[in-house]
Length: 324
Ligand SMILES: [Zn+2]
Ligand SMILES: [Zn+2]
Image (cartoon, rainbow, N blue to C red; front, side):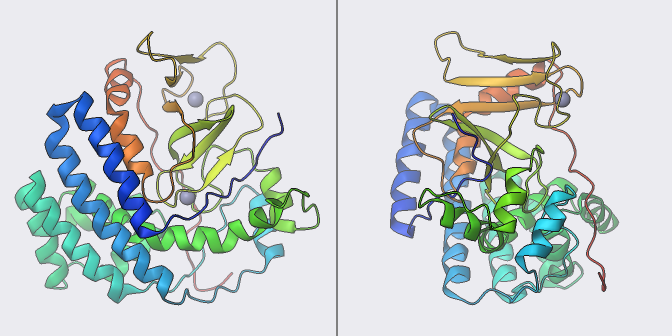
């Protein structure tokens, strides 16, 4: 079986996304009715995300001065394509969604903590542009510091910014990386495409576009496809090893918490203490439905965490600078 360095996930139109999402939520609810509130909140959040995705795709993306050879050189140094790039963000559209996401979170269980974030954004005490830029740059430290300084819940600020920037990050990822993959889809490998060649050598567990860790792995036709938790990129490693530290020996094990459901597994690494959920599926989830996959497999997060495993912190990436 040939290795697929980067997999082009076909975009789905809004109506199709909503139908597929609805079916998946119904399946979750049928099996675990106690997740009713969580599903309802996710439904409201994802509707906003899908709406913003439409807006972004209907508009014009910023012109990035990132020629294929430049992107390929970064990738071959193990640096994600977007890392350190000063990228103009459509602040106005994203901030409108950011505020609405806060309101939905406030109504859906996060209460005052989310209301405080909304108020801080609306009063410009928390600068939306800076927050969105820090999220795109995956700068956990900056967001944490900025939130704590203003008495806001850091994890919630991180989440709401990530949801608002996700559709933009996804569009950038596709612009920069998918071009090479789409040409490949015809079936002749495009060895002459520098980005494609560099992706072929990308054997890191963090996303080649944005540097985030995978939310989980979706296995389609035997391809263990890592799925970025932020921009939804899909890529496969050349080795069966821990996505976080590359351990491939005895400390790295794959287990099915439920003997009757061998299609749902969790990879556990005793070297770094990380875990990764792995699920067999027919098709890769189009953006932004991967978060439903995350919800569907919440029981495996619980099982892994009960055994002392955790998701690692964001990888340190190069920060945008005024020159390069
Ligand atoms: Zn990514
Ligand atoms: Zn590891």
